[in-house]
Image (cartoon, rainbow, N blue to C red; front, side, top):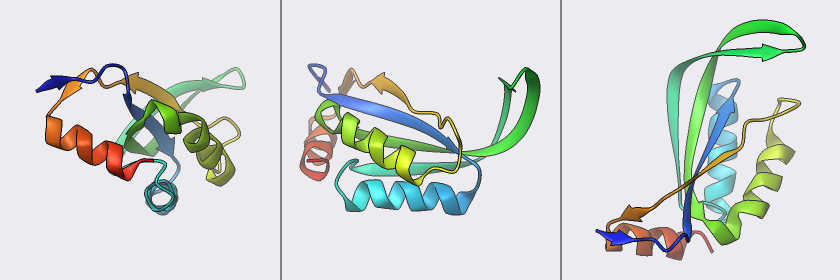
Length: 109
């Protein structure tokens, strides 16, 4: 395992449906904005929207990318997303296997 030096990120995006999540994930990978997109179904979200507490089933997309690709990835997610305010949360990836991080670097540039 190696430290990443702050170069890698995990991006979380919730979507209204599996088809939307697949469309966004596929586009991000095809355009090399992310090396990988994992789709997690069955997410239950509770949130406040327009002064009301809402509860909704959503689909979570986890994308592995580089810090350098974040701005373009966010633009692509916003362009394709059905929500007025799509979730786009970025987490630092602090360490990982050397081979996996190399693969992320090669596939998100």
